[in-house]
Amino acid sequence: MQPIEDFFREFFLARIADEERYQVSREEYRRRFFTSDCSWDSHERVLEMLQSEKISSVENSDSEVSVITVRTNSFYPADSQLHKYRYHLKASANTWLISHVEIECPACGGRGDESCVFCKGKHWK
Image (cartoon, rainbow, N blue to C red):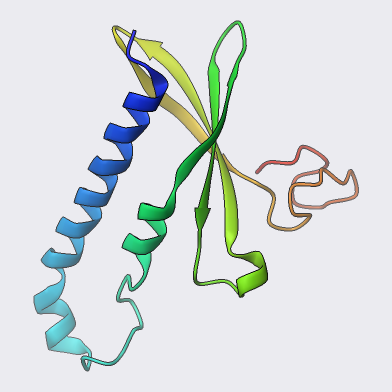
């Protein structure tokens, strides 16, 4: 079985390469409709955000593996730029597939407050 760290290294690199291709594909569109200093709809800082994501922990259960990652999101104020994601993985042949992804609750900060209207105490959304 492929080590989870290797799977995520491939996943992160492929996602970054895909974002780079996407941004290149939009260059003509951006030149046509936006000034060079307009950041609206530019995906500015998206690559930086994707490149910052790192594995924080790996949790194993009988049926699946959960990987928690942390990344910086510079679109937020400095004191709330770190965001956690939880990837749920299932084994597939000799590797892994991501079955779904959750984000740490942005409303309660992942504290799991049962009065949180967003996550209802589950920490994740």
